[in-house]
Length: 148
Image (cartoon, rainbow, N blue to C red):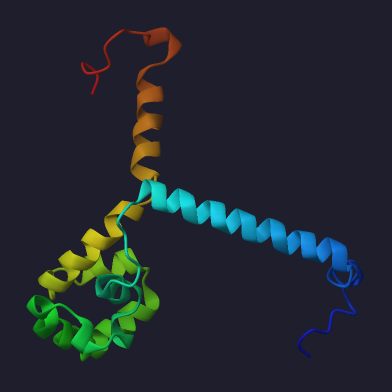
């Protein structure tokens, strides 16, 4: 069944149109390279091979010997906790580590420090929305601090 696109005529046309497909591949590769350069620019010094990134991605697949010694003991407790494993499968990475903070504070703190640079823009957007609500045309002031 894999590769069978006869039900999707337009997809078949695109996939088997060699010049178009080659150009599409080239465009995608250029875009991904550019994206990689932007990430390097905005987050310099990040090494995705760092064991802390592996802990954040999936602590249950990490090799214990690669984990820093100061968090190994707590890490082993976390890995052998079946409740934690169930929660990891259900929750998002940030929610999982926030929930584990009370039970495993050392490992969770390291994981949350790793996640923080990639936090969502929700706080910024909600703050901006609040500012817009405060600073309407009817209440146009020079200083916003009085209303905050």
